[in-house]
Image 1 (tube, rainbow, N blue to C red):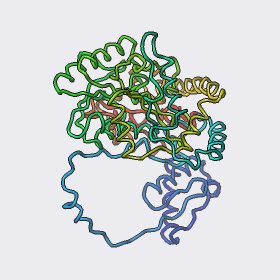
Image 2: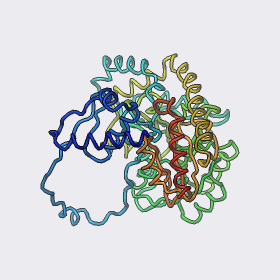
Image 3: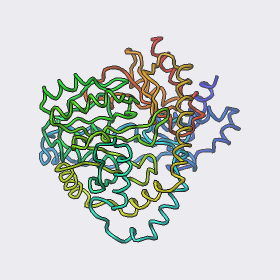
Image 4: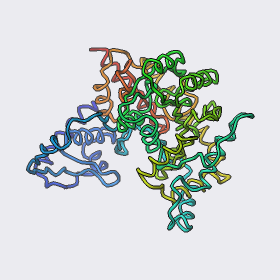
Length: 471
């Protein structure tokens, strides 16, 4: 019955739109509900259908408007084909996880935490203080503010076992976000045309950074508990690679966390081959049932290049990350960083340092752990109830996502379209594989907005999967 009402609203509004001026505002949801005796959900479904057809555009908080039809002469960019030549390395398109969506959809695709999970009060106060201080007018050192370098070094040094040399502040280079750090690490340590070992599946941004550096990615299979050290050793021997990129704690997308034994075996393999491990500790602040222990804390010979970001845990507007590297590797990384961006905004560095050195920061992290646990369990339970064919290979002990295996017969593109038509935005798993996917997966974000809608989102996914099985 709801589908019939939605179709009638769509048909009536299309007739009205046909005679309306471009930019004309459609009647409000409340008006349409009263006019058609339909529920707000049915009216929103009709408006989404019109938006999908390209005849209206939605402006969150303002309303829906008739889309203007723009007719322009085609531009000829053919000359660029000869000027650019054939690409040496094709750069992947940006991830679906970066899409912005209307407020009225259930967004399970994002790679970022909801605003409610950020220390907003601390961030606003820190930005105000940093804007009033010297950081607002002075150029910071190329490697970063000394106080922030010291903080990154101390954080890692606190986990360094007795008998090993902890990192020093001069080992740290500050970057404008972890993506910039990955770009530089791959350019400085790998270079164009050289092999780069990488877990599969892995973070799509690392795949992008490797492509931009011109590196030749060699996938190393990695499951719910991490990679096989013997398989990693064979990959080093077969390719002559000198760098392995990995996420030992709460990997994106799989959520995998390496055991201490596996971490030690991987580090041994890296050392035996005279290689580097680029350790991405992106989820350091997002532990739930376990605390991350970086492999870099076990290494004082310069084999581990350690990357820790504060962007997701402090504020999406405060893009600050630290790379800890030793010896000539650190020299090359700093030189590349200077060539890329000269230095990182002192205001943002000062604000990030202000937040993480406040006593309230630790209180925030304790509360965050409980909130993430509740959201994770809510989404996991909803999937088990409403989408039983969507199988979780493991429940992550931290991070922001769950990694879901779908039946092999699933058409992922169709699943994404069907879910979006029903108001649920999801991210297919293909883009997290540096080579061909080994199955059909979804990466779902349990830290996104409106967790109360997780059961509805899981129900839509389950219904879309059931329709595919029925055909």
